[in-house]
Amino acid sequence: SLSTSARQTLKIGLIPADGIGREVIPAAKAAIEALGSDIPKPQFIDLLAGWETFTKTGVALPQETVDVLRNECDCALFGSVSSPSKKVTGYSSPIVALRKELDLYANIRPVLSVAPEVGQQPVVDLIVVRENTECLQEVQTTTDTGKEARATRVITERASRRIGQMAFELALARPRKHLTIIHKSNVLSITDGLFRETVRKVPTLPGIDGKYDGVTIMEQLVDSAVYRLFPHHVSENRVFDIMVAPNLYGDILSDAAAALVGSLGLVPSVNAGDNFVMGEPVHGSAPDIVGKGIANPLASIRSAALMLRHLGYTVGADRLDTAVDQVIREGTTLTPDLQGKSSTTDVLEAVLRRI
Ligand code: ATP
Ligand code: MG
Image (cartoon, rainbow, N blue to C red; front, side, top):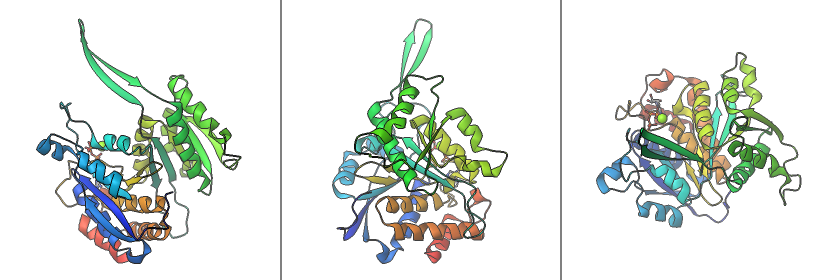
């Protein structure tokens, strides 16, 4: 975590970007504002990025956005981007670029169900830790027999080591302290083999000095990991605690895990590096519901909580999470993705009342 001591104000970059990002990020902002003196006085800075920014300016991620985040902000909240269905010349995903620019090498995605009663154990309680900076790069060429598409997969020791260390740190902070390394090294023995070996060796790195001795380590092939996420016996969900995975597997796993808790609209994440943290709901821009006022704001409010927690503001983070849990548990004010009839604003107001 970053140092919390010296801050009088907390400068938060807001990048709603496209689609329902513009509906749910303002809700997260309002929830943070409701925390009052639990956190340093928040100061919000609105920043541009996304498909619409690209269509207006020809740039998906303006340099100013990167500069302000880097030089002025303590943290940020990102909404979601719409991506064109076909490749558009000059356009590439601004979130991918932002993760690279700010070296946010870990995408941390907790998937948590809310137990029916306070104090009961949740059925699903795991964290997917996804490597964020490398994996696949594509090219297309034309040969005399037609088009050929290729992807190159890059896995480095450096990236695997630091995501591994982040995963061990997160495991250490959990009651079960259980880490599962996700890979497919029976097929991709060179790339996934390197990932797996490197993560396994983290506890033996110089300077660790037995710090991770209490963490138990398991391995699971990605395909069987998805299978085991959907058990016949609910209790088997507790096989997983922290799951650390290369980029693509982590993405797929966390969407699959989201299905276990009922909606993508509940699952938060942070993109974290050594010097910066950016909250981001796991869901996308949801073009099917955009503008209807029914997007679930809870994933974004939880992302704000996760961001605050990462910065060390535990009290503020707990208050947000508790308020969200109460709203889910009561079940009377929920958006349609959770079989409710309420709007984004209704749900936000319910959360604000509980904060
Ligand atoms: P994108 O390409 O931006 O990811 P998508 O079509 O894949 O767009 P997602 O945002 O990933 O859409 O959402 C998948 C499904 O989950 C959609 O039906 C969407 O409406 C629903 N969904 C996602 N987020 C939310 C939310 N916050 N509230 C309600 N429904 C949501
Ligand atoms: Mg999607």
